[in-house]
Image (cartoon, rainbow, N blue to C red):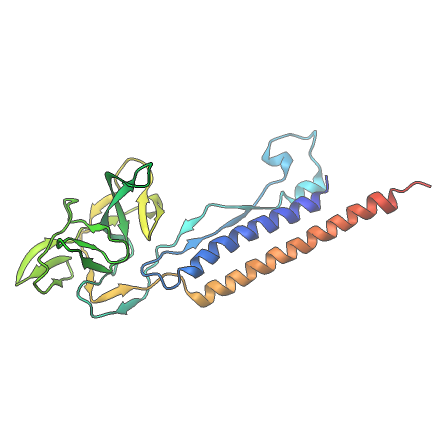
Length: 266
């Protein structure tokens, strides 16, 4: 086995993985409330150590080289994005990074049509609007916004709307409903679902009512992906792919010469 060939291949594959993640982050640098994915790469142990093969196949020099690079656990950074003022009363921003709005998402059936089964999901995208029936919905996806009882919020379409810092929706001087501001103590249980939504792992519901919600009306949260730094990281990942591809080519040339030149018998 050409050990250098496999080490270079592992470096190229992990760098391509970083490229994919960073490209998605860059594409969402203008997506409201987007949370960046953080790719990680870890050192891989040598084969004899990783598979616990013992001294029979152990080689001191190769073991010290290690087993190359391996893609590690991908994380989500929930750092709060910068506030962006819109002056739209239906736009809200959650100032605390561990708080989310709850949405009712209807699962698609096998035929592509809605199955009618509703699942609660979370989002940081606070761009809201009303539909024709007066239900408060996400302006981006159309999913209905939920109150603290996991019920859709319905308001009057012909009255001005004010949303205070506690998430209470006020019309004509009266509180008509309250946004569900869910607090998640362990953010690691959340996973991305798509459409800027988060679901959670396992059957246990991690949502807790926010003890001190901080809802800011007339603002939205900018994307957590900074275009410049993400682009620089993407360039570095691309260079790593090219460098490892070059090493692969050198390894191939060395094997060719070893077989066809040095291995040639008179």
